[in-house]
Structure formats: C-alpha cells, structure tokens
Image 1: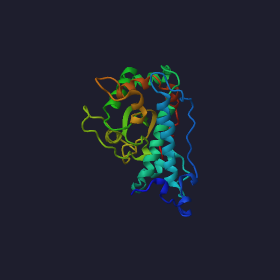
Image 2: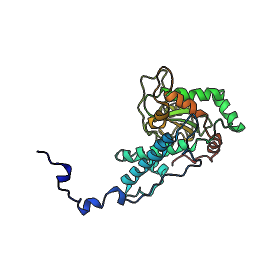
Image 3: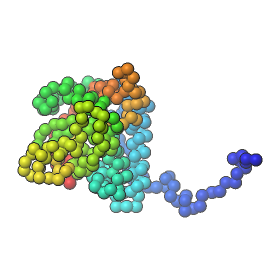
Image 4: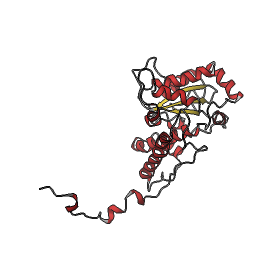
Length: 281
C-alpha cells in the first residue's frame, strides 16, 4: 500500500547543502530604478501585469542568475554592460554573456519609454532622422516591419555609427549592438522575405565600402551608439496583445503601440553622447 506524504520520514538537508541555498548568496546586482514609474501601466500599450512580468520579474531573474554564475570570481562585481563585453568572445562564458546582454538590453528598452504618449521629437534629432530615413513615418514603418518579420525573439535597434549614419538593425536572442561584443553571430530567419540585414551583415558590408582605419578593423570594429531599442521577446508583448489572428493583435500591433511611447528626449541625449562612449574597448 502507498504511504501518504505525512507518513514518509523527512530528513533535513545536511549543512553543506544548506550553505549554498540561493537565499545565502550575496546579492550584487540589484533591479535598477527606472527614471519613470510604469507600475500602473501605459494606456493602450502596457498593463501593470505585463510590466511586472517583463521588467520586475524578468529583470530580477536575469540579475540573480548573473550573481549565481559569477559568484566568487573576478566578474562578480562587474557592472552588467562591462560584464557582457568582457565575456563576449569567451565560449565557456556564453551563459554569463547571454544573461548580462539580455539584462542590459531589457534595461535599455524600458529606459527608452515615455510615461506619456506622442512625445514630440526634438527638432535637431528630427532633422537628422529625416535626412537618414527620408521621413519619420518611414523610420516608424521600418521598425514595425523588422519587428513583425523576426521569427524569433530579439531586439530592434536604432543605432548611429561612428561616421554619422543612422541604421535600424535587429539582434536575435540576447545579441548585443556594441562593437566590443564583436557581434556574436545570431541565427538568420530564412523564411523572412525580403531578407533582414542583421548586425553582423551590416558591419561586414560597412567595412567593405569604408576605406581607411575603420575599414581595416576586424568584425566588430565599426563603433556604434545605440539610441533606441524595441524588445520583441514574447514576455514583453504577448500578455497584452496576444498572437496575431486575422491580421489583428500580435507583435506588429505591439510595435505600433510602442512607437507612441518613445522617449525622444532620451534618444537625443544618447545621440549626443561623446564619441567612443559605447565602444566597449
């Protein structure tokens, strides 16, 4: 006869096991304080539940994993951005890179949100973006098109490289836009038509046409400043927008709603950062 759970003898874990339980680990990386409070959600874009899942719970989980993986090593006190740069070309440390890069990207995404919709684009920034993309509407459509066309999760970035051009580029999974991360190769979606240019493709093409010191650099040698990013991981949009059915809802609808909540002042401040701030060297 099967014994009930109550009748099964219980044994306390030996002291050696108790000493390594998560609750006893030193917490080095803490959930960052965002500039704006999104805990109440954003109308027609993000519910409080979605914010809690995509930011509070997801980010906390990533940071706890980083603490776990770097405990008692020279990496344990390293800031997340520099941790991803430090581990980018070390295959045995891929698990640390993935969690650090994902945590940094997720923070970058939420830091670029405005608490109010339809923030005007500062004139100087608007002029530069219109020169690069012909119009702001073209830029908006490109973001939505790329996000909707990505079969797997990742991020869509607006970047400005060190010889002045703006580009919209996707990175898949936890891929990083920083040159110091050497653009770890991301899987290509062969079912997307027309093909999406990935960051690695873009850097190779840029090096092929750019002569001089930049063109002579190895892959990852083109310095870019990320200005804005859209998070396309499902936990960011699926709770509120569901999956696309009969051309309604889904990731494309999420991207359209996100565009209204971009903090363009933040984008401009990032665009005006001193040259080399994000080189990762």
